[in-house]
Length: 274
Image (cartoon, rainbow, N blue to C red; front, side, top):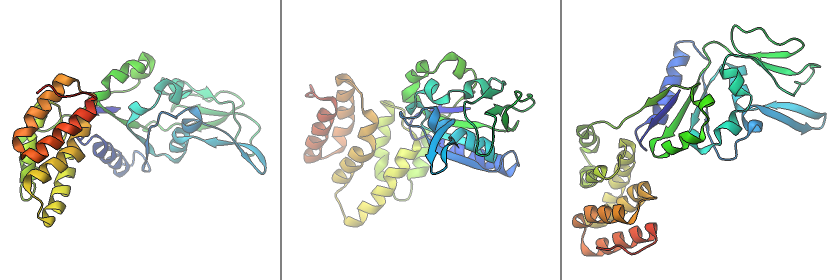
């Protein structure tokens, strides 16, 4: 399954919790966490030949390692990878058919095959069997939904997509109570973009630390805006940038207003028309 939602809604935490529950239910031996990258190919996921003093041997990739160990695979930020290139022969396995790899394991004379549960292994192969309870749990940011079009329909239909939404605003106020109240000033930014609670929780930790330095509220608000919230607006157009500035500026003193305007202009690469 693929968990989708806005940044900071807890998709990764939920994926780990689901995998841990799978372990407690004895559906798996644990889970193998990894983060997808644009460099992924079948060498990283399925495996390939690796030179050793004894010659070339087959080194299993992340997916095959997880299958062999009975661990669920938790893939964070799956949208970073080139899906079709990375999944390779796993396409066939996820559709319920066995696949033969062009590799042999050390000490074997026949090639490796990956065989789903309940399927007969191909003849003259060294089978790696996929348990019936084996799962892939992946996460994908909603801001990258357009990347779903880069995922072929053949791959999309092999996953269940589950939306992880942000909680109601009352939950944010509870998270910020007792030390992070200044961040309630920035809850208004959620009207401009769907921001998950994890962003506010991280910002709260920063606020609690900086308050020990007796920093002025306006300065502190600018610092958390710049460090935690402005990056979430990358890719906005000039009209959205004006909205953002108009939302944040009244909450700051003049010095911080000038700095906020400067960093927003740097982000969009042009002057704000306000």
